[in-house]
Image (cartoon, rainbow, N blue to C red; front, side):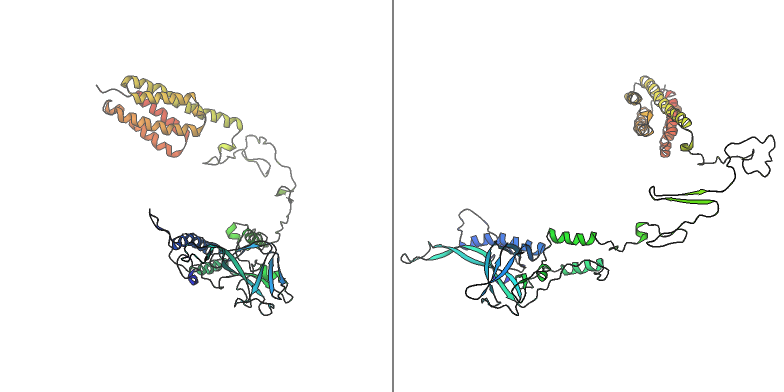
Length: 461
């Protein structure tokens, strides 16, 4: 009896009981059985709902033998471990030999018509000891002191309702994955019951009493690492686009100027005065002109006349390059010019910071203001650390500096004259606005404006 319920209900959902201890409690046999069954049934529940039923490991070497009494036995050479549908573990030690029984529990000598072998959990009593509660002092009464979790081998004509693992192929297509997942979710919305009479299929037997390993292997249903590896291997070796991924989903090129050839090649054909040279090694195709005529390498003066005539070798003297917005990019300038501009920008950022140090130090003395002293010192440290050299570092520092300068403005409001304070505050607001441009040059120029107006601050008389 498991957890004080009927044996026929051990595979069904039920409430669990466990002992409530207190000092002086009289522990009876029932209490200790409750203690054992509570943990056993909890473990069985997890096994049943999380792992399922089937062979876990072993049972690769089994042999049917005829015993001396003519009945059939099953020899487990390598042993194994299985779970029945109730979640109970069936452990078979190596070299165990067990009688083969029919569904009625009788030994069999012929399994014709009942070629499927199952394992069935069976607990047996063992370790008989004298009972101290025997009322008779003349007759010794013995009771079993142990329960051995064993098993029976049952021969049956019922075919196990299990399917072999299948991989997708060109000829045999499995269900669409979304349909398969929906069916799987529906199947497991209800708690599983024991549909196979608490038996675990172990082997199919041929007429010559040999084991049919083909039918046996496909009925292992607990997904151990071996089975998961099998499924994974099936998938990664399927090069036929098992998920039916489209070119649109991957962003793949479908056609060139309306020409497509799925799985094939699209040829480029050279026209007049054009050569096409593919280079597979560099993954490049060179398209070049092969036309005649002399290429212009220099620009010669055509004198004072603005009329060039019919020559197409040289640019007209009145030709003007388009220098509109975003036509000439910084990266297209010469290296020398780029370097000179970079030094100029860095100088303007440095000048803005040094101006901040001097002017805020002077105004700090004039107003006896700690925040202004902090601004001057913090900016001096930034100059020493050359934050002006990198645009990113300069912008990060200026954001911190702006907050301090706004705090300074709040602190001196009312102590400075209205006009000088208004000019300084307007310069701070404009500095805040240019931050949105993320242009360090504009920020440096506006900070120079702030420095000018902070020097113009006057103490109210």
